[in-house]
Amino acid sequence: MELHREPRPDAEFLMRDTTSHPLACTPAYKTSVLRSPKLALISLQQSLSEVTAPVFDASELGPNDNDLILNYAKDGLPIGERIVVHGYVHDQLGRPLRNALVEVWQCNASGRYRHKKDQYIGALDPHFGGCGRMLTDTNGYYAFRTIKPGPYPWRNRVNDWRPAHIHYAISGDGWVQRLVTQMYFEGDPLIRSCPILCVVPSEEQIRGLIALQDTGAFVPLDSRAYRFDIVLRGHRATLFENSVQQTPVDDDGPLPGRPEAGRTLSEGGSAATAASVEAP
Amino acid sequence: MKRETASQTAGPYVHIGLAPEAAGFHIFENNFGAVLVSPETKGERVRIEGRVFDGIGTVLKDVLIEIWQANAEGKYAHPADRQPGKHIDPHFRGWGRACTDFESGVYAFETVKPGPVEGRNGRVMAPHINAWIVARGINIGLNTRIYFSDEAEANAKDPVINLIEWEARRKTLIAERLDAEARNGAAVYRFDIRLQGENETVFFDV
Image (cartoon, rainbow over the protein chains, first blue to last red):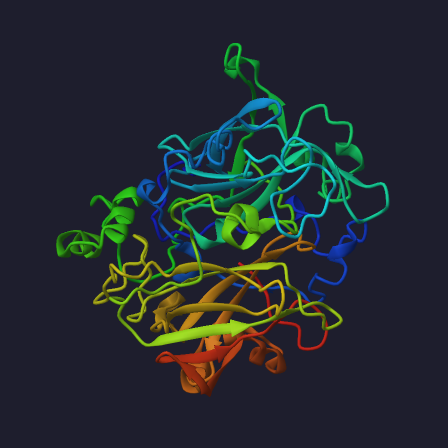
């Protein structure tokens, strides 16, 4: 099998395996009942609209955007356990996702979100915002520093508590790779009773959402570390003819990498760089 | 082969991560938002606005929508788009995100009308915008497309619209042009999204 060849940039992505995900309607998570489509999704063979996606550039992000300990701190530091969260973003075929936008958000150490609609009695932390963002490097690696979020009660059943978690949104090479998920922490006793996590259809997939403590990445006398890897939809290699457009792509000619294309866009783009995107 | 990481709901506080200003605080210098155009962007200005309804017609006020579209020439700002004779507009990325308002439930994007894009087997797709919807209670993001009511001829030939076997459902993908409400030189199109129930919006498994 030649699945690990570099795919054409306009190659299709693997069909989504819906058994990897919760169903739309999961009554244990009550809010899903009225917010889930009842009719079957229409299956669509991919076109340019699905295999392309926005390109991001490091210049769009600030230097502290991936440091949740510092990015909202005023004249002190946030309270709570200092942790590093890190890992790799790959596609299903094991290729690293480069320049993928990873956005994260969470509550603070007392389980309170900095959000105008959160009424929980847990205290806000004046030095903690609770969001960060970063781009993966050429190996698909990402890392951020934060305070470990606390668990909190929520309105589902009266004693439902969310296990400590961090929300993720990831944007890859194609629109169909867009994914929102949540990361949990190894050893949390609330994990097994969470109505949002337990609707994930297999033990293997649930385990995939639980970050493991990564002692090798501890920062001595400073922070513990957790490892969380993410898998996005696979980009098919040209094993069979599966490109979505008729215009030939010269397999030998270098295509602009994502960062270059991003610079073209964010810096206003010179005629030369725009032309290089067009070159056959 | 590895499995895709399982999806989880974006939750009620999705704004914190993706639109912190909407959550009520300022943290990032550069925020991703609902205005896709700058004064230099080429193309016809359009405003896409609407509301999102649940299965019993409740207007939802905690939804986040992202859109991804080609530019006015019908080209995506992405290296995979090799359509001949079309050019990237350096002033248009074609991506944005909007939140439904906490009071009115209305979302809105300021963008340009995309041009037609080459589809599979050379069949042209009518001008359209790809939309992705996440919120509390949505376990996996919903994909749909926004087409334009004043493109009836192109829509009639569109290969994706024609895939929908139930003709009555096709209209759920058409944003209605409201000429009377044009403002600031932008045509206004209304695109309401119904997650469930009567006139349920067509969602795609892409």
